[in-house]
Length: 226
Image (cartoon, rainbow, N blue to C red; front, side):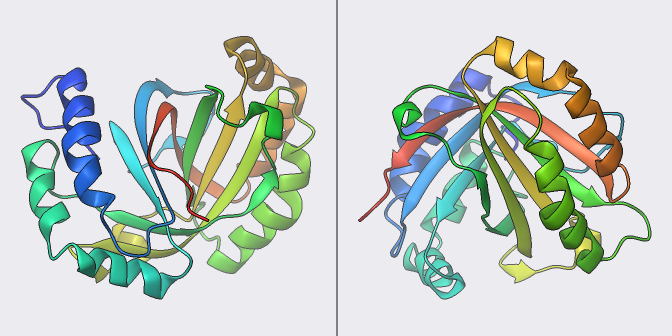
């Protein structure tokens, strides 16, 4: 999401959390709903910048694709109609299959962590199949050697939606989303300056074409349901 041009970040956050949040959280079948607000645009990589330029993003979790469609339909357009009041109405959607590589320890659950999220496109000439193979079968093992992070997800894009219609990769070139969590800024700095990070970045350049990376603060709107 991109905030309205005439809004400050504080106004954007306030409206998103306190007005839009309750509207969206009324969706049927919703399992969990978090709002991630961008606090820093990070550039710790040597790859090109990708197409995802945001001030924040909503994460809504469902048990299935069908449950997601039912959830969106259950609002009868109320959520979509509210978006232009605080954000750019052209709000594209990524549908993701989450994969946990390093699970956040239970003792850190509920604590304020630093989240680093990256949106990845494919390198030129790399197919979806090769991207997944390199990312899930090779890169995940390399990334686990990097010191500092306490949680690591690899989320694969399974659909891209614009205006309620599925669109091809070429119209929203994002193939995967990386989520990393850190206890402290020092841990994040250690992660990004380590030789293991340099090794992982060199491997990523073989199949990743562009990256947008952000640090975010997470605001739970609807907590995990049983």
